[in-house]
Structures are given as C-alpha cells and as structure tokens.
Image 1 (cartoon, rainbow, N blue to C red):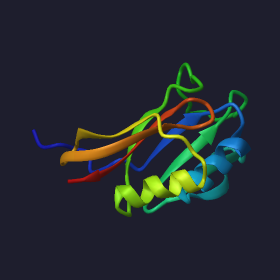
Image 2 (image 1 turned 90 degrees about the horizontal axis):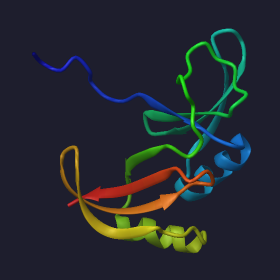
Image 3 (image 1 turned 135 degrees about the horizontal axis):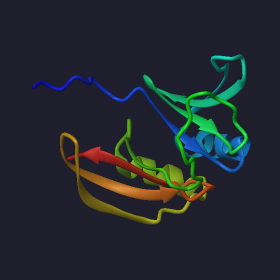
Image 4 (image 1 turned 90 degrees about the vertical axis):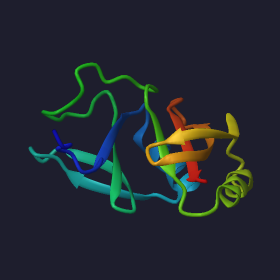
Length: 132
C-alpha cells in the first residue's frame, strides 16, 4: 500500500508557561507567534515557521482534541535549518542559548544529517540539523 500521509502540518507542545516558551522560540529560531481561537472560541497560541507550526498549550488549555496525558517536557523533534548549521550555532552562541549535544552525525528522513541538540524552557529536546 502507498503511504496515505503527505507531511506533518503541526505538532503540539504542552508547556508550563506559554509566554516564556514563545519568547524562547522567537529568540532561538526566529519563529513568529500566532494567537487564534479554537473550535469553541477558546484562546490558543502557536509558533509559525515556513509552512509549519507548533501549537502551544498549558495544563489549563481547554480544547476538545487534546492528548490523553499531556506531559510537559516530553517533546523531542527535529527541525531542518534554513541556514548552514555553523551559522545557526553562531546565532545560538550570540543569544547565549546552550547546545546540549553536537554537532554530531545522525540520520534524517532523507539521509545523513549533521545536528545540534538544545532544550527549550520545559526541557523539550529540539534537534536542529542540516542535510549533508
């Protein structure tokens, strides 16, 4: 059977403080914040980049479609840099954002990648990579 899915549209992170998390992702990655209303008019928050987004929720976010056990700090995902990885590393250094691991060689969805790993304010693991 051929795959029935084209791509990931968005992910959701459960965080302690939506504003603190938003500021981190703006500073570390240049993401843009978005405020929108959920299906019943409830306030929602997201981070936009390219054609993707990360929705943010805290423990009190009301939405009819939510993970069964939303857990703070359990996110682990990989982003592909739009600039050379060495330039991204220099940006992190300038922003005083520490790198946990890397650069290291890994394998991405399309082949070999070179990656660095960092953590957001809740401890979610964010891998940033470039294809080599």
